[in-house]
Length: 133
View 1 (cartoon, rainbow, N blue to C red):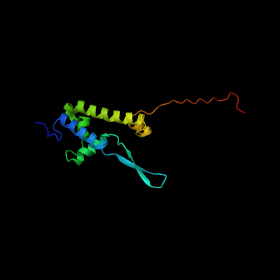
View 2 (tube, rainbow, N blue to C red):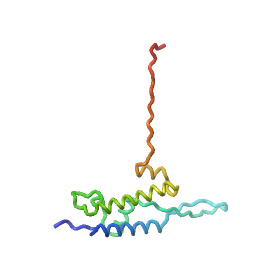
View 3 (cartoon, rainbow, N blue to C red):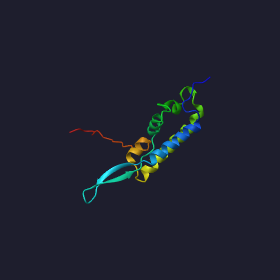
View 4 (cartoon, one colour):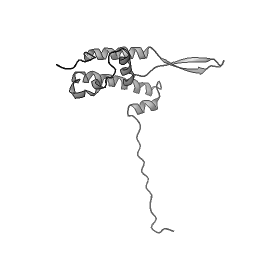
C-alpha cells in the first residue's frame, strides 16, 4: 500500500491551482505614486503566477507544506501527477512571459526566471606583433 497523498488526485491539484490563480488575479498589489496635488495615488498591479506562490498558497490552506515531491516525482510515486504538474508549470510560464512581453511585469526578471535571456557571443582577438618595439 502506498503512502497517503496529501493531494489525493491530479484533478484536485489542478483545482487548487485554479483557486490559487483566482486568488492571485483578484488581489492586485499596489504601488503608490504622487499625483499633481502631492497626494499618493494607488496604482493596482497584477501579480504574476509563480510556482513558489502556488506552493505557499497550498501550505496556507493547510493541505501540504512542501509540494516539491509532486513536481519532482520522487521515487516515481507521483507519476500520475506528471501531466498536471507540467500543465501548471506551463501555465505559470505562459503568464509570466505574456506579462513580460506586454510590459505588465518586469521583462528582465521574466526573462531570467524563464531562461529567456538573450545570449550573445563576443570573441576578442588580440594579435601579437611580429617585431615588438
